Amino acid sequence: SYELTQPPSVSVSPGQTARIPCSGDALAKRHANWYQQKPGQAPVLVIYKDSERPSGIPERFSGSSSGTTVTLTISGVQAEDEADYYCQSADSSGSYHVIFGGGTKLTVL
Amino acid sequence: QVQLVESGGGVVQPGGSLRLACAASGFTFSSYGMHWVRQAPGKGLEWVAFIRYNGNNRYYADSVKGRFTISRDNSKNTLYLQMNSLRVDDTAVYYCAKETDATDVFDVWGQGTMVTVSS
Image: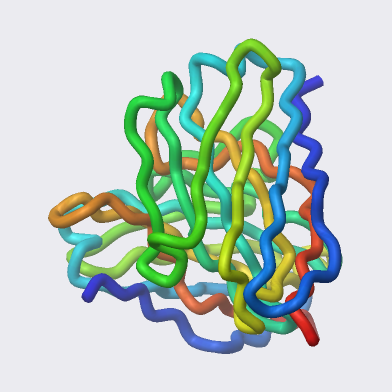
């Protein structure tokens, strides 16, 4: 089955760099996207196609890909970045479906 | 501005039915694929269903296949999710989401509507 695996939590101090990995076999062939979700709010797209940043998203958010792992990097973390982050991709090898990683809670210490 | 507004959530008994709607505005609704994504209380995001821009192709998560039906009315700029044979584990906030020109990328989300399945 197609799965995306993320660590449940990551903690960093303000101003440091946070890195959130997401791994899955299909990422070798498919792009991944990242969403930020704050409590009580809808998700927001922060990175798409592994490393593209939508307009309006701060430059401190970046993405990279290597093999079967994609990584969301937040440089110079700010308190407002505390949120849940989800990676997402899709698979059409069988019937088309979309997969989300389990989510990573970013805590700013 | 680009906006999605869900409606139709509520409390329903197991085995019951509910129809969600997602009203779109601020973009050419008929040009984009649309998805439903849900989130159970305290849990992560789970994809539910997808419909292509013209309604010709529909896909479902295994967990809802045969019970849920996604549809759209491009003349009304509205997306729907008909949910039948509801189960307790269908309890969640249901979001509609718009694809970008790049498929599988969700650039606009609604605020969500809560569905509670309980006896």
